[in-house]
Image (tube, rainbow, N blue to C red):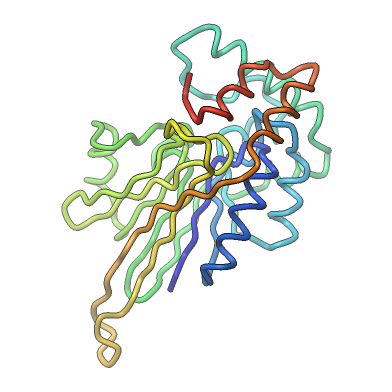
Length: 247
């Protein structure tokens, strides 16, 4: 079973299209989106409508929760007031741009999902099992706490925009990275494929798990130019798209 997990699309239509095409070429059995469909870039409605049309299992991110419920803050932890100000501009534009129908869709997304494949149970969340906007950075205190309490075999999260896979004892934590706003110091979109295979096809008692972090090139200049041409979004968002950086 090959499960493709995408996260943090952030209204980046061109990155999403490239990633979905890549997933099709890799013959993923299932695609799961773990939130933050909207924010930052210019195409929230198109992103939402693609996920709806393709019937992709999607859970709610903090941006989705905010836009769906007409909130003016996204719930991210901004240390720099300038970053908070830019995020407010993003919220303002996205709130205006997103249709009423699509706000309703965001508002009704589930906050988590749990699926079992080949004797392995995977729990999908956006931030963490505790709160939608908690950052589970690799080797962080928060990650260790959450994984120590995890009942399932695998926890998959997003929110940090940095993909990784790490075992905490026998439990596996996977971060799906970011399709639309990566923070890997590269502009390419990224996502993960989790491949769960039965080691013993007769007994079906044991299974192996492999995680592949995939980067997909796309026309990020097109996204950046659309941001620069927008009258509300800050031009600095275009730089972040081009550089694939946090700041």
